[in-house]
Length: 342
Image (tube, rainbow, N blue to C red):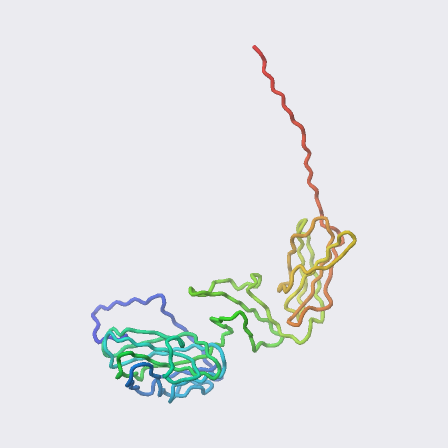
């Protein structure tokens, strides 16, 4: 906010909630614009009023912004980073103002609601002029318009000065923030490329801080392909770790991004395969909880988004896992105590 007189020295504190961000915009990049008011705008009524009549934008990548109406037309559903700095004049101390950036198919001020978009409220601390700023990410649907509105309950004669600014930038950083559904379709993936997708939960306190490690099951690798893996992997190492565990390693298959590990247990002249691990992302694994003294076969099947290959790499552990019996012999150690009479 501005003040007509400041005592010297004047001490201010920069709070930890302050932030700074930079976004590089190419002329052929994501949808967006940045501009400032062309002239002062006089507001002559209480309630909601839209900010209009803006300068030719510094950039307007898809020509979606109307400088006269102040509307940014959304043609792609998604998230947009929005920001506005509004400088108001001819106001009185103690007055309360609201500024909102919202996305709606109706861009008029007649149906603006306080819950429509990103909103900030300020109680003016001094007469004259006052600055209100807000920014954040806004979810918008195709066909809607993003606009800035200001609200006053009592003042019907104030100005929006030409230093005020407004900008919108489409979020294209491969991040879907604040997604409120359990399902999401990720499009525009490149064929034969591998992607790591991290899903992180959040609540009112923010997003959880998790290391980006696929073995924590927070990553899913997606590889669009047109056919099943044509070749099977090759098991390169099998090491018995102990009586109940074995280490398996295998080669990477070019057209695969996941693997299924099956095991076959030989018991009483009957054999069967069961899936030990499904949709595994690495090329080595330690299988545990095996039966000591039993014979196993293992196979590795390569897979992609279409399923698993019909041919799999198999290895037969012809020698059983060592089974060491531990026995204990109980020895009778009876001791007889006697007393000598004096």
